[in-house]
Image (cartoon, rainbow, N blue to C red):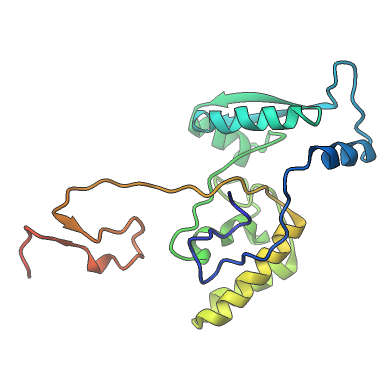
Amino acid sequence: MATGPISSTMSWAYNPNVTKYPRDVERANQLLEQAGFPRMEGGTRFRVAFPHATQYARYGEVMRQNLADVGVDLTLQPMEFNAAVDRVFVKQDFDLGIASSCNGPDPEIGVTRVYVSSNIKPIPFANGAAYSNPRVDELFAQAASVVDRQQRARAYYEIQDVLTREVPYWWLVETDFVRANKNEYHDLAIWSADLAETAWWEKGQKR
């Protein structure tokens, strides 16, 4: 289960002490009532359109079941991947969207783009929520401008603290990617920056 924008596998930058939101159907129903969304006949409060790539079909089913518990009718709209990306990021025609935000080997590579206000653009995989917070922008800039890991970690810790309180996105899960290769290849990196120079092939020729 994800707790924020930075994966727990990136241990040096991951902040475990952030605001968390355990499942609480009773509290969610109370908040919706207070916000002026009473249940209508049949128990539904309102409907939400969810255009998504077919690869997220199972996510959609779980989300629809969970939201039904609080009277929200999630309308699933599965579509081809590129069509879904165009609908959400370019045309921005959606109530609820979903995207995979790969962290990469460093938060500056895979995380920053999703939250900085300079990346609010109608292009794929930008800041699709149009989230803007000057302090968050400043912290990302600080983290990118120094090489000392402890200094960078402090900036990322505060970023996670702010984002999990403001919740511009809802982080669902941390996913593991699996790659298969023959056992004669060693130390292959999934990401190009993961010390790829250490990879070697036992049948290869040294140069």
